[in-house]
Length: 239
Image 1 (cartoon, rainbow, N blue to C red):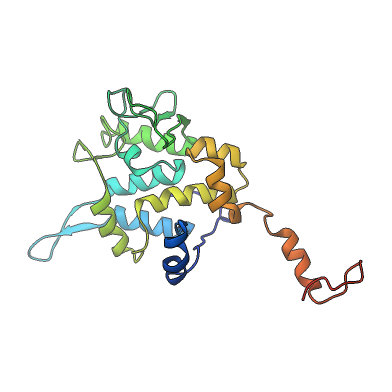
Image 2 (cartoon, rainbow, N blue to C red):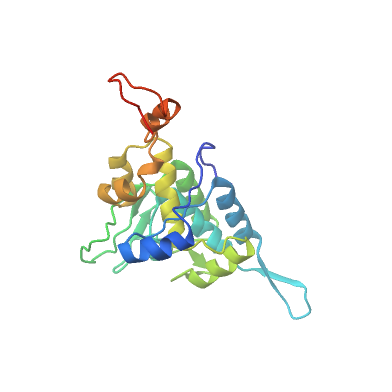
């Protein structure tokens, strides 16, 4: 079960036409996030999806690992590659989750530093409890995300299948990172804390997520009722 603050909501930046004209040529990317209800529906679809046998009968479950991936992405705002690459013990070339200490070491052991920030972060208690249970039950023995005992290197194809089944064809794995950042901001978490936790610069947050900050447009809303009225200086407040 996905537990997130009920006051968190979704947003969609511009229309496809606006993006084609303004975004593509001005270097501004459209940002899509999902609502709490959409996230829950996506997880449920991934959890219940089953293959169909030739005779039309239901076969084995095929994407429960994706449901686990979605949970990790929403709780931590981590890039898809870092989630799929996360082991459960320190491993050369991979990041890892320390289940005992509850820390997610996103940066691969031995990897050089790049522009993509990959800070080590504590895991939320609820997510950590999930991960410990997955490990205890043998669902995740060596990696955070596994399928039939093997690490999942990428989730792109499975994600596309599940999102289409869920009726969310405009959602991608990276959408979950945008969603996590947006939810934390809307919940009132400071920009600096979201930056440190999710590994995104404050400049990017202020440029693309400003409208998610509580109180961003309070002065605008306060001024709206005064449109057309005379201000204190004897001039019209707005035309």
